[in-house]
Amino acid sequence: MTLEQLRRSDRTSLWHSFTQMAEYEPLIIERAKGCTLTDVEGNEYLDGVSSLWCNVHGHRHPKLDAAITLQLEKVAHVTSLGCSNPTTIRLARRLVELAPAGLEHVFFSSDGSSAVEVALKLAFQYWQQRDDPRPEKTRYVALENAYHGDTLGSVSVGGVERFQAMFEPLLFDVLRLPMPDSYRRPEGVARGAAAEFYLKQADDLLREHHDQIAALVMEPLVQGAAGMVCHPPGYLRGIRELTEKYDVLLIADEVAVGMGRTGRLFACEHEDVAPDLVCLGKGLTGGYLPLAATLATDEIWKAFLGTYAESKSFFHGHTYSGNPLSAAVALATLDVFDEERTLEQMKPKIARLEEHLLRIAELPRVGDVRQRGLLAGVELVADRCTKEPLPWQEQWGQRVCRHALGEGVWLRPLGSVVVIMPPLSVSLDELDQICNAVYNGIVALT
Ligand SMILES: *Cc1c(COP(=O)(O)O)cnc(C)c1O
Image (cartoon, rainbow, N blue to C red; front, side, top):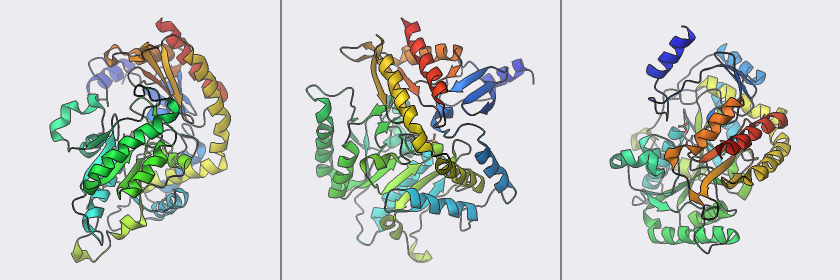
């Protein structure tokens, strides 16, 4: 195919995710190394959003590449339906060792949405068939503006109006808590009092409805797709205490914030929280192959044990659940965390990102900058004093990102929030280039 044919087919044959195909401008990446992407014409771009939040140690990492070829010499696929393979077993063991205390069992699937579906279904079935059953516990609590994936179950617990309005008739009803936003707080609520304020609302809701609630699902610390909205410190810890008090399972969706993104391997570690169920995806394979995992406690696992005739097994599975090639590269990803001391090496980068954000925060269009580890959002607003949002239709974030692309930095915004989320292996120099492109892109708006 010529370049022109590639572009035409990319616009017509290939239907892209979350993309208005009538306005799609092809960006066709042919190769990548480290944090640099190269398109079919040989143009280079820094990967400022980790291939949509999943790359960890950079592209074409020799260890990760080798793990896949080594596994290929053994077997590419083994089903997880009543069958196993050494690589996937080793990965399950490794995750159990690394996870917060009590998470001792791993159910594999292929993407983050499925990891959330699995957690929702496990929570439901757990209450139906545990020793002291509570069959009336069938509902879920989720946060406003939550994003947990695109399958119907995960969309049901999601709360992004724009993504779900269309599918409303297909979704199940969920109890909602307000988004614990540190930036846009209700009137009269000081920053330091925000956690207490939002936890009071959670307490009220759980007190009233806990008898019907199977689980509360949330992203720990940061709501990624909501616009990198950071929860007030102590909120997660408080939610864990409330869910324990009211006998409600806590599902932590670490698909975006897990795998080192926040500076700890699991985001829950920051507040010393051990959930009942944890979902991992995105960075689990270093951003190489599809794989997701749902980790569960022994208490949940035990409720599914019995004879075949009792019909207590978990009736769920995917053809590629725990695929050995994916498992091999996931194991290698965890090895590289140790060998390259990735979490330790992130510290100066986190500090540098913070310096850049302070500079960016001075710009007139910028309402808020927020950061957790190597994850940041820069929110552009119509009015800094009133925090009035910019209409998403006007694509302010996209305009900044288009400018950045001209400076050789690839980014993808969330409405009027510019996302900065480079691979954890990014160098200080590369980080400077990415942040400078964001700065210049915002300056160019005005
Ligand atoms: C991306 C994401 C998902 C969905 O993962 P997919 O692999 O895209 O299905 C779920 N939850 C969160 C928090 C995410 O960021």
